[in-house]
Length: 217
Length: 217
DNA sequence: AGCACAACCGGACATGGTGTCCACTTGGCT
DNA sequence: AGCCAAGTGGACACCATGTCCGGTTGTGCT
Image (cartoon, rainbow over all chains, first blue to last red; front, side):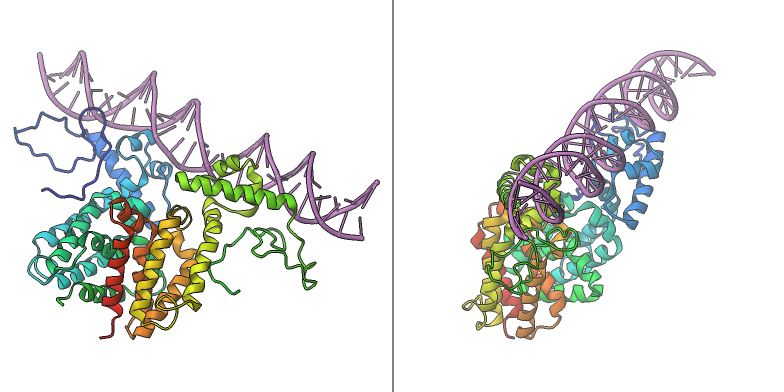
């Protein structure tokens, strides 16, 4: 479970209990090394996440104050776990991105290993537009502007694309990785959709680029 | 003078004197139709622009308050002309972009008309990276995030790239235009430069894409 | 059960930016 | 010389931020 695109929860004093990613393990192993998440904390986490999901869906930007009010929770409580609205959106986005990451690493071709690089990149573009389509509001809330590159998820996508460029034998993988990822910026996709371009058309334009750039010479 | 990428100055009551773009015409023509810009106003405009240029160069974000303080001008004066820091950066950027726009329309090939579309796009990429290199701080101040697409300049670049795609006979010019422009987003370029990639390498990667996508089949 | 301690909660507070408003000043014009 | 509109700048009300701390609640232990 060495996933890369994880949330970075607020780290309080020495240990980090917040937004715990795994279920109770219930094993003797390290059950005592870190305190369990308390019931009230879990309850509030749910309330916050639900309220934030709702707010992000209906408008932007969303402030910490709004989320706290909508969740019926104090501001201090909110700040305890999340430093800003973006990190809340990121937490919401987390599991969706995780699924795609899994498919990229171990799924069937052409998304997963086995297909030629150009086809894998095309499939990746297609999957990413689906994700943007479904959770675009969260992506806009979480990864807007330059902060997008700071997320762990971006590192994952970048590593993936870079490896495809290398596999295709095209020079300059480091520059190309960021360049090829640029059209997936949420603002760009959002602009195209607002201009009336259907998702499929965006995806196929990207597929065209993927083949043009990575196709065997 | 039908340039597209102009600044949009604050429009006060019925007429718009602010940030006047042209020198005194001194012709009898419409010299009286709109009042001249007053000397004190011009003085302050200079002070504001100079201070803003300095501030944008050294850090971001820059607030209206800071600019006013640095320029030795009241906040009300600042707001009279510019609604926010971005529009000030845009005003500073204006003439540089104007020069490039001129070259695209009427300059020598490969930037101007005459060269094959793939070469013109490559040359455009090269010129844009130069512009980003020199005035990146202003571009970051002016066109960050989604607001980038709202500027007149973006419309110009988009129309240019679109026409090249059409000339190359590649399908889907509307989608491709935004897609091909995406890597020129200031955050993307900034990221690549911070990662130690020299400008030339970015430009040549973009040239490669230009040729791969627009080259005659 | 019941206790004690730590985790957790939430509102108050100080700070800083925003955008507007309006009484005053300045400069161009007759 | 004097008028008057354009221009100025600071005060004001508002809102979001992030921190802090007294009180509360859940958990583990006895």
